[in-house]
Image (cartoon, rainbow over all chains, first blue to last red; front, side, top):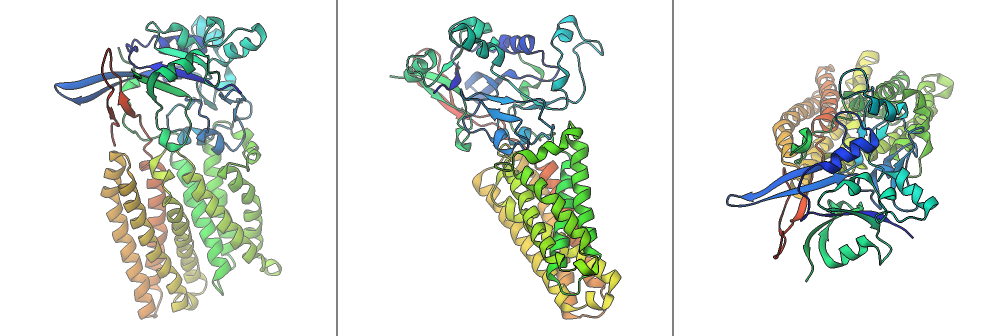
Length: 216
Length: 291
């Protein structure tokens, strides 16, 4: 089996938001919709304070609450663990949005562009009316991952078939690959580093791991 | 560098489900409660069947106005295997049909079927809320009995009010007041248990703050309604006390459901079980802002 996951090395993330910009560029999301963003979390009490940058997006959960509640079957899970949405079936009830514990579902009713009513050339090229009035979210750049099956390239290793955010990361904080392959980059990172997954206690089996320190 | 909404880390109120979604729970709960009341109370006015069906229809219309692609609404039937929303939708047409028909004398026996379907529909609604794992106020197990009990209480309230108009002598009888008083007492217990459960199991601070600010007001009104219903039991002359109790039973139920669906719907926010260490050392303590 294959289970595509993302590994985020929190020690290396500088909070530059390049992945946020790369995602918007690759997916043409409207203003206010960020399929990926980086949280800036300050913890502790002066003088013992820490600042942590935490990239978040759809966690592509192994047990996705959004899929169970979806009344139409529009939200489904692919055999490699990615959670996807069939825009042609979705009725836009937003039940998935309230079921997601990661706040990673978005619904936009009307077309919106960055600079007023008219789209820029890039927005016009990427505009997809099928995304209006339905639920949307990060796809792990599914068009790229799907291409790997035709080309024989390896997602997470070959940039052509790797999510845009991972390719863009200037600090090599983001990694993508197959968790079920013990030789993959992500499996190696998970073996060698202490890590956690967000809101794991809710039983979602999230597909994004966060590294915090080297084991041993 | 930050993005405009990166400050949203602690739980905030979801905005996807607004008063229209609340309307489905308000009218759906009241309508199903009315149909259950019509099924179990002997001599209940026949008009309660169509009235309950009309309430349920109003609730579904509210949702229809909320969904992003209303002309695809029939897709809602496609996932009954896992989705409580699909299950609710599958019951709805049968519930509305039987509820509407039970007013016709030759179909009077349908009130039992409508009552059973109404119970199933009400349970689906409660589980639908409960299945939303992203919202602590909804996913708490004690939200289920609260939603069921308040729906039944509202239905009893409507039943009593309509009974007062249709047959004042029956409405003033103690055997009509007792069920309403019992349901009001049950709702007070369910609300208290829900509040205690949320406090004990952990919830966002904003949610607990809003709950502790608003819940006592509703509990006081519910207690007044209960006293009015008991007054009717003690002095069954006229129907003013039971009418007041019924009106308050409906009003507080709607107040509660609007609060749960709209006002208390804080999401999970973000949390870090550990903070990273740069260089040599061990991870720092975690953080869960807003909890």
